[in-house]
Length: 269
Image (spheres, rainbow, N blue to C red):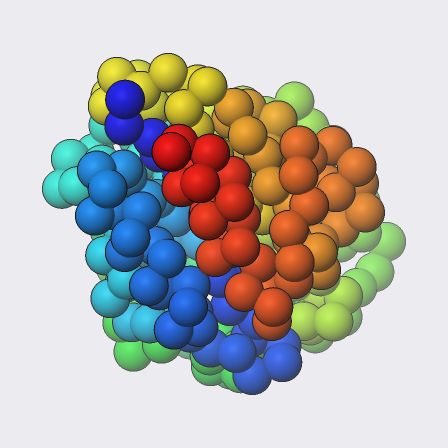
């Protein structure tokens, strides 16, 4: 029976922080071999599709779990699509506008960034995201928002309380990154990479035991625990490695290729 494998991006297929901006030749060849044998390969990412670099898009993935499971694509088909509730988006925008926080709306297939938000523009350019692909002139009330990111030049008690409230709310969760201008990401709590994988598997009629996942970060926990065989990268978070079925070599040691060869291809022979 066909198998499906799901891959995180940064820290798994590439390592932008150390200049590795595309998958190695060995990883590419192993992914192609997996496809040639009749299996499916997917990206499972917190990013929207507009954030995916050409080096990822040219690999030939069969589908995408995007924005931590808020949108799932199999081929050209959208098999799951659940935006954040409009009332929540209204409240987030109201607070940001009152407190000088810049923000971005992540949707599918477009990403929306107000043309007056220079700080956020600079932030994305600095981390290698192609801002020129963003929609800059729009009516945000007409957008189905699946994820939001925020950036501010400062923090104060009100902003700290805002971050903590939404990170611990019943509707949303997310992550903060103090190394990127006090960046905050918020997305639906009930949708995860794991739930997105379930939607993809159901669409393809592939049983859980024939699914595999490779990741390195805490937002990969759900998918590692959802699939039949979860693999953590050697460079990954210690908690993720403790919960994974296997730990493969790090991203710079072609860990994805090693894992595919050992736990999918060889195991199936």
